[in-house]
Length: 534
Image 1 (cartoon, one colour):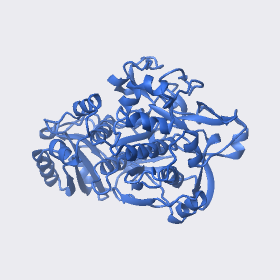
Image 2: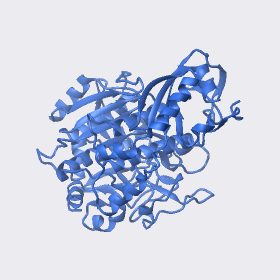
Image 3: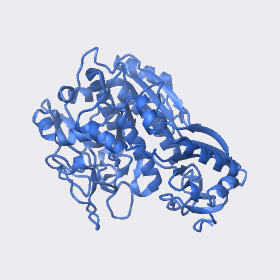
Image 4: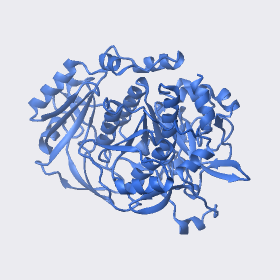
């Protein structure tokens, strides 16, 4: 049944799933188990967001207003009606219809869902626990071909991991760099010459953080910002797909990610409103959190920071396409999306001897954030690529899924080192301090700890972008083409600092763009000046 569609049904392109490695079937799912799915619909026939964004970039056009976006990009009423009718025929309940995000949320029993999408749901055991899963493709009625572009939530395996590394003093002594140092986020900002005026503090901006587990305690945030003598930023949490602020109680849990993101962004842009979108760690939760943040008209984020991800091979094609479309929507609306590029070197934690890049950082509409080791010698800042070994090094490389974007055509992006030598999107775009041995001092679950990882680089850049947006009085939006195509001027004015030493395994740093540090690290004040004059 999983691979042969019933009469009147067809395969949903890109929906194929394999079991998690090291997992085994543990029996069928209880037919009465409640299941919720999010169905994503196609863009209207008149929509061509990629062209709209290209025009904005080329002519420095303003982003679409929310009203313009709603009028031109919402799901067609007929398409929504067809999915509602499909749900009714299959004993599924409509939980929500959202034409702007082009999604319909359906609920029903596992048995009804299995029948509706012609798949078999199994319970799987793996070393981390159990999950509800499926193999092979999903199927949809012929009349919904092209209408439905993705169905998420039938399979609830953990989809992503946080890209952070707790500095371990004992482990640190045995590694190549024995000397260690750590910084507060304001010290890092100072080393990157972020502007330090009392009024340029992110005021009027909203920074969205996507979190797939863990939580924060208000007391921890109060303690941390008091220690730094920085006013406590306004922090709000938003629940997506029943996810919520739920601290686990230990720094080496997802709490570390949540607090790191809030504390780095909040220490550098304390005037910004920080909104944390909590969702389950599934492909559905991740995608729904992003579309919720992009289309949040009450909080209006101008920048989104994402520190979670997984190698491209761990995603379905439908999930990568749907998330890439959400990032295109963000770009069209003038919202910048910063994504951590991964912490496991050029292999990205996949043990097949090949190079892999991390998604969502590999989306051409995400600002992929790589990692460096930042030190000061005689008051001079020195940076090399972060690499303390295969599982403690910046991600980066060539996408196997996304083509080389036009704006990277002259950046010197090499073919993939893999046997197929695929020519694809180069990752990352930019970099920042990420080595746990030159890490960030944060406060989590009542403890002062030091974290590294590209997880810290995404909120670092997000905070810088909030400062830029405040200074410019308009959003910088989709930054990738600007940084890449104006590299020469930005480099000559020292707004970008080239990182030319080190490697992440398969790829080495060098002049201009490279697959470890992108176009380099920022001189915050000079970059803001350069982009304000753009």
